[in-house]
Length: 148
Image (cartoon, rainbow, N blue to C red; front, side, top):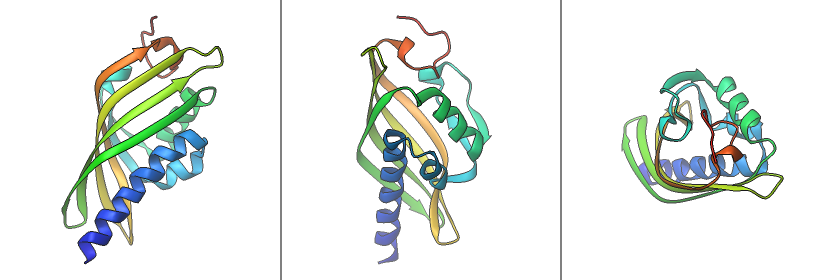
């Protein structure tokens, strides 16, 4: 029964993570994350993987997305657990629109590393695998080497 509770808690965690972007709830985003996390957004941002603090992760997302309308659609969640650690693979479509109406939509798979810290599950790593993008990369301030 505890494994079912853990799986549900991880699904709720990922849902809160995705919804925090669309609500611009940066405090809520931080509450989903471990103190430090490994990230790999190299396929979208053309930056190397890195290990960063929760605060820096939130700051980067807030800076890149504050002027965009977004909707993060999360589905097809597969959870694998091993003790107090786990992995969740999820499909996501991220819809983005800037103030001029230009869009950049990203279809991707995420691999989230999760770990139980105390009674809570938190995200400790995020790897984004881009399937394809549609639209203008110039919409997203977080992408280096932007072009239309």
